[in-house]
Length: 260
Image 1 (cartoon, rainbow, N blue to C red):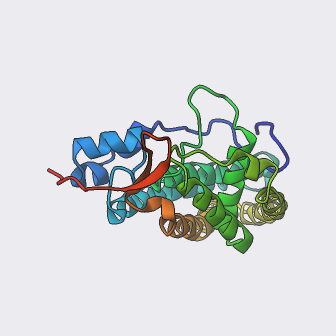
Image 2 (image 1 turned 180 degrees about the vertical axis):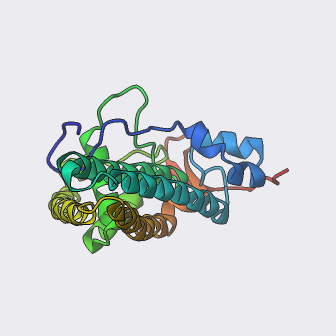
């Protein structure tokens, strides 16, 4: 696990950070969007490119299904050895489970027009990014305070021409106490997850079926919960803010292009 602040979510090593272009050049988008729209989505956001919400939802569902299948398969494989290997397999399984939660949170955030949560030229996440990821995972667990905080952060960003995380609010201001509270709750959930995995893996082979099924039954609805919340926020609407020659930020309606 990487180091970080106590308020940050779990950060397993080896987390894949797909570039924006890799994420957006998926079949669901290329089927429905022009090349210009995809380019604009990469340069700005999918909302600024006017990509319809239903298209983004299809891409989001594909990502959720992929990550769910992968997380379930890895969890099932970790359940095969049985009781003798519990000290090694359970921590690894919990780490990969939360790793897949972070992966889907990253993908959904980008599709629904949040800033790229992983910088390609930085090894570590800043505190604001750790904070928003903590809130995203809180949403996945059904924490109402995390839902409200994510909505507030999205509202702050929707008023900016350049979409950036509100650093002060997430690290010192009104959102930070919620981040700390959600982080504490997630620590309890990790403990519960470890206990459930220990029980499910105690019997070889049978443990694989139970463990994989447990992951499928929990991960899929949690990812869909985050998708539902992010897709409902102001950031997804096909408008964008621009700065006029006088330096005033104004909202400019998007005129959709006809897809080829």
